[in-house]
Image (tube, rainbow, N blue to C red; front, side, top):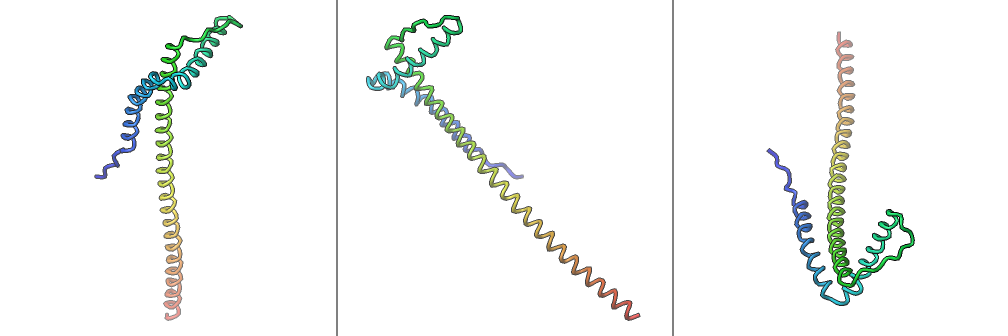
Length: 151
């Protein structure tokens, strides 16, 4: 009985996905503690996200031109850290998907090349057998002529 290969790549991808969540949480915690990350990495995306979200909600409710107040610094830092963590998880998952796709594409390309090689080998064998058949047919006709000439 032939056993298929153990899907080690899928197991590795699953491991990377599981590791990415705690890693993202650690990065979020460090980003909140660091003043640089807090000011330049967490706050601007959070404020922008809040502005877009509130603008969309206001338009849905029919309010146009209403001023949107920015989030306070602590809330914005938390939201920015959450966005950062989700972005990291998204990038890791996207990378895993791209790697899995390229691995599957390489496998299918390899299988297609193997099938093409087998097909060419079969065509060559058929051509060779056709030549042998023609040769045997010619020999049979020659033997038949010799028999009729001998009678």
